[in-house]
Length: 248
Image 1 (cartoon, one colour):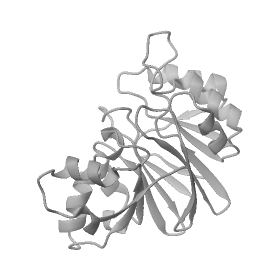
Image 2: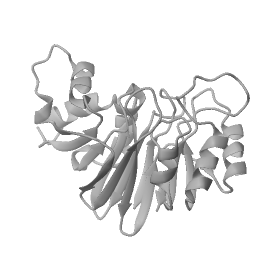
Image 3: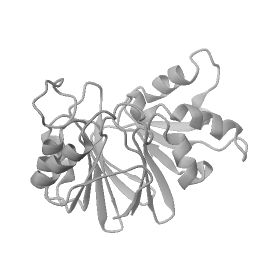
């Protein structure tokens, strides 16, 4: 598998890149995992948007899905003309949420653009990937996802507070792509929302993963501190950056 970070800023686009979005490729199949604020422009630097085979959405906060709206325009009116629908797997209500964000007064049938499917905990096949989903701890319906293909495995946390489900899902993964939105500095933070750097490292260690890639740092977070906290709990933890690519 090849992982390309299109955007990794937490909660919103940041000064150096878009919000969450990741391109995962294997055996010629191109899968987008989340497509947050500003990420569609970054996608065009790395792949032909007409060649994407499917999209998986962890949840329906704008920093993880809102750039499906420009993608609607591209798939209807781009250089190749109207493109056939591709699968979009997301939480229940994804179609209505995207339609509301795109144009609530439009008569456009978004099912002419995307084939929406609801994600539930469990397994399914998608192209060369075996996908496994589990519900994690976030205020809206959110699923972490594990992708297995070619004997390799990548688990993506989505957004979550400390959560045993993420540890179970990621167990033995080659790579855990895990959010860490803030530092463990004692400042009050909302419960049941996000991980800090130490917690991301602890989840990786408990899951016994091979490699930890830390993402979703908020633009005002102390990047160096979060990286150090993650590495203290999981030696070798790395902070991702926009446009970075990894062979898994």
